[in-house]
Image (cartoon, rainbow, N blue to C red; front, top):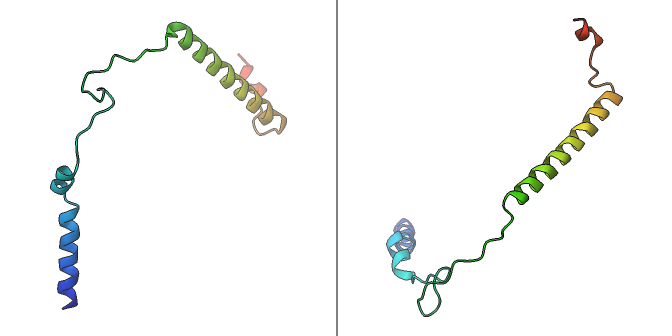
Length: 91
């Protein structure tokens, strides 16, 4: 008897959360591209940084990366965790 009740409750939950029920309950409103009256909104303005923005971003990224790597290399050398050997320069 309890098993039948649990199964019927599970069926109700499954029917209420099915894809068909979700599609039937939703209303399609697109406010991102249209106004409330239905007209299409104009294209948004784009910031005009172009090549200057790319050059600034790359330059700043390279500077920060070089600074971090220099500090890490100094830390490793001071603590003698990585010290280049002089034997490699015997050319």
